[in-house]
Image (cartoon, rainbow, N blue to C red; front, side, top):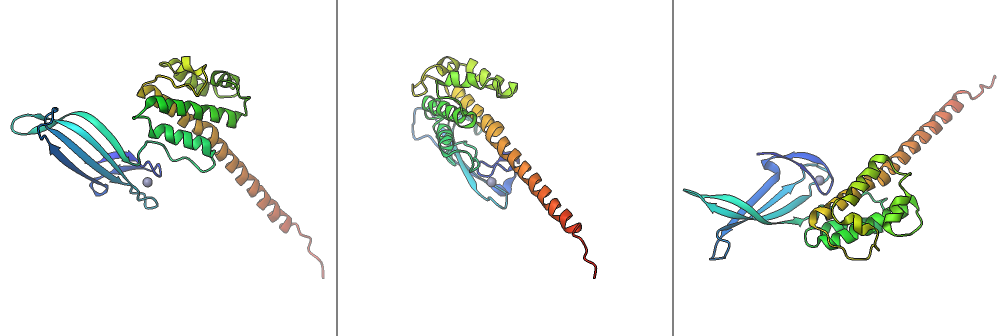
Length: 235
Ligand SMILES: [Zn+2]
């Protein structure tokens, strides 16, 4: 059996087959109040020759008795053991404070959506201040002040997140204030941050690189041209 997979270490997309995946099941009962359960452990190794990192995930599932054996029932819990969060690897030119807030927001998402959302909002504010150089106010006003600067699609995405759940209502408040959010809402904020990092920082960097390459190419051509027109001295 094969499945499509994206490596959390190098972002490489791959089809994972039996050669890159190992798993094991531990079933137990021991008179626990949930009945027969199965703890499943799975590791996947990245086939990218420059990476070869591996992930470890585990899940706890119910086992339902059917004749003559058992089948898997509901998943009761799941854990990411390595890496411990779904944070995407970010390039080194992203400011450290933004990177740290993003990674911590991802790390704590399942355990505490509230703490995750607080970190995600701080991360968003850090990005708005750093990238757009806006005057520090509260987050809602800061976002409002970049409305004419960002692409309408991007603004719409921010607006959708503002409208969903409680996040919109809390954006007006101070970012240090703890807010009540569920895992989905906190996950949406993380998704928004990933999109904005891509659209702002990564696009800007790629554009600068392309311009730099063009400039370099122009200079190289210029040197070549000058070498060609060098006057030939007659003997
Ligand atoms: Zn990889």
